[in-house]
Length: 229
DNA sequence: GCGACAG
DNA sequence: ATCTTGTCGC
Image 1: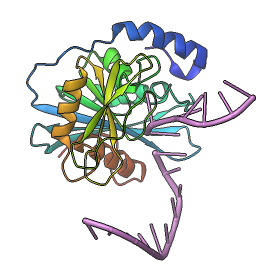
Image 2 (image 1 turned 135 degrees about the horizontal axis):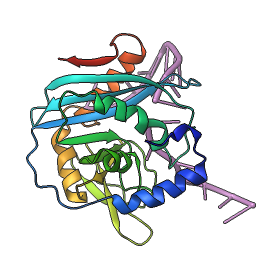
Image 3 (image 1 turned 90 degrees about the vertical axis):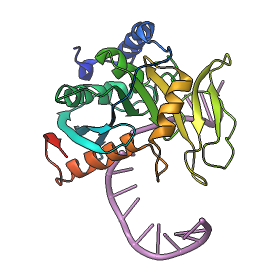
Image 4 (image 1 turned 135 degrees about the vertical axis):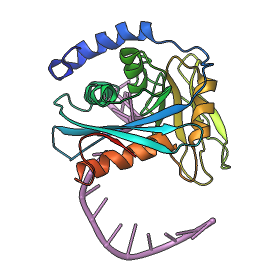
């Protein structure tokens, strides 16, 4: 794989324009028995990132194991280029998994991106895996505020009116989350998947647990490697 | 030129 | 993203 740390933003943009041709947003019909969530954590001003993927059964969502890894990253955080900071480390965590999930939920957007290449799509294309993006804030697109009741949702569209994701009120009286297809799944499918992963919190269990794990990992509570639950 | 701007 | 206390509402 290319060394993202030496890329310039213009070069990264060209890479995204090439990779967008590989993204597939078609209905996913396979059965899901294993699902996973991915996230990154790091100390402010540090180049060390703590990446993690948590495996869990579906639809029960019981944790199966945690894959944690540390990596040095110098590519800066630039809105629209998050993948160049986080994907390399996530791929390491991915390869460390003893078994791969049927779907991976990534903390960030999928095709709800200026060039349709959010981190979930980027990872999906490189790993050849089904991915879904679940973000806490909008990066790109227009939408109407969904109703205040749990489950209310509105479409997220691009400048031409094409639907690129869904704004979902995962819980009553919380800010909505942004769901979009990463790779090998469509908008309705990604929404249905995430809805089934929401329990008692605003964020779906896969990314919520992944966030908790990488944070504990960074703080020294959890250790590097794959750990079965 | 002025806003918007994942993590 | 991370830092960081008390405070408001369910």
